[in-house]
Length: 228
Image (cartoon, helix red, strand yellow):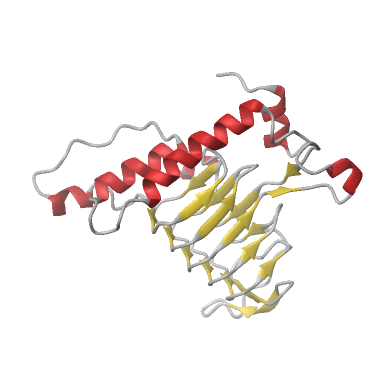
C-alpha cells in the first residue's frame, strides 16, 4: 500500500500532523493489538500465542510454523523470537524492528514515530523508554494538537544491556555491546562496548573484556535484513 504524504513525512523525520485521520486510525489499530497482548497473563498463554499476539502488533505477516507434538517442542521453534513481558506501549508498532533473542522487560514505552531498531540479544530492564518522536520548541508552531511534529530514527545495536528507567531520545544510535546504566538519559550516540551513565549520559569506561579497545566515533548498527 502506498504511503500518504503525511506518513512519508513522519517516517522521513519531516514535520507532519499526528492527528490527521490516517495516523489516528493507525494508532487505534496498534492500541487494540497492544491491549490484547497486555491483557494476556504470562504463564497462562503459550509461547506460540504470545508470538502471534506480538506479530499482530508489529504487523509481521510471516506464517507461524506448524505446531509441534508437545508444548515444550513447540517453544523451541520460537527460540529466536523476541520475548516481551507485558505491559508494553507503542504508538504504531509497525515502526519497531527487533533482532533475534531480544528481551524486553515490563513497562517499556516506545514512541515509534520513526523507525526504531533493536539489535539481536539486547536486554531491556523494566521501565525503559525510547522516544523517536519530538515536537517543535516554538510554541506557536507546535500549537498543541493542531500543529505539526516530527521525529528521528533510533537504532540500538546488538548485545546491548539497557538498565532500568533509561530514556533514549530521538536520533540516538547505541553501539554494539554497550551498557546503559540505570536511570540514564541518553541524548547522544553511544560508541561500541562502552558503559554510559547519568543525565545526560556520559561515557564511564569500556565494558569488561574491551578495556584496551579504541573508542570509535561511529556506533555499529546491524544491517536491515538482520531484523525479524
